Length: 385
Length: 211
Image (cartoon, rainbow over all chains, first blue to last red; front, top):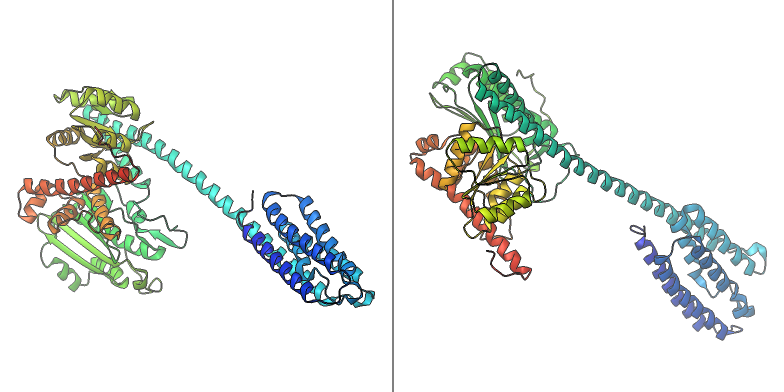
């Protein structure tokens, strides 16, 4: 049953048919000079029965046989009109609007062309009823054709949309399966690297160097393949120009730099996330430059819904009091422009706390809410790293 | 007891632990086996890898937590902190360590776990913080567990990479107090999780107490 998106169409057609039967019954009831009204009621009964049968059958059976039967029954009822109406027949056969039923059905099942074909058949049968060939009921035919084209077109669009949805779902399932398998493989790789690091440490000498290298690669790989952040609602899909800040920040992870988050998704526009990540990168670069290679650093990103706070902490020797201000005064704008400038442009704040001997903490706070974001990347004087 | 699906790792860890003077009573290579063996042997501490065939590491942690006197569980993972680690901790694990930690770090973590202390990495502290935030944001749980201001402070400092001693210095507390704060955050989360599971079980009509 592929009637997923077409169900509503069929229901609408059945409703239309029921209403038409009602209308035709009213017409018959109010007509007073028909030749054989009793037969008329019989035809109405057939119409009603067929409406019910069609409603049931279209849901169950596919295939053209049903469509042909539908058209045949309808045209049959239509052609019974002169028999019922006799000379009193006017421009409206007893079936009235009910004849549009199969036209719509053909359009839904077979598209525009099938609908047009059915419309032509019905119109031809209708024209055959009339006395003079010239008096073809123009309006009726045009309306039938229009209906056929419109419904056929929409029906095809619905089918295509359904197909696309199915493909997308299948692709997503495949991706997820791949990711699951990949995770298993990654874990194996990481474990072997960790083992090498361990053994290297134990053995010492050259092996220790090898172990150290393995350890660095292990840390880098681990950061690279982090699984998605913890979610409490289903994923919103980041294909719309949004990136999770955590993904950007994880790239800074090494054996010396630990990147952690609180697991909350932090979707930001691509350029925004890049700017924040660049500021973090600048802070880490400062650590490397001023504190030597052995210093460890930690990057912690948290979000409380309104604001995202990223703290970069190192255990170096700290910045002596006043040094930052002095550097700014002397025109060396490194920290000021690359970190403070960037974050200020994003509408956030920067807080630097440093204690001699106890390291430095740089705290960046930026708004997380869509409404607070600026309209686009700010254009300003070029920034140095 | 050591549970890990990589024989090389399993043996390396078991050997390290044995050399440090502890008693390795059992090992297991997949989830179902782990639960079976643990039921029979009743270890005090279980070192549990999260990536397991059969039953997942998280589910093994849940099963262990349902024992009458549950063992302390130290969770190991190769790929760093993520959702599974948080789930395992909520289910009752008392700590987490990354597999690439040094031998010394492993033994320290083991000792602390055996003593009943929580073993937190910065990443785990961050995830726990986030979990409390998420619970606070859910309107359906107005009486969920909450962090005190002190606990939030301590967790944030752990997430930023400070050692317990450094935190104790900064906040002018004893190291023991800092450890207790961290432990409390874990306990509250685990209690809440257990209560939720019980409520869920009752909703399903299974209201026998597990043993």
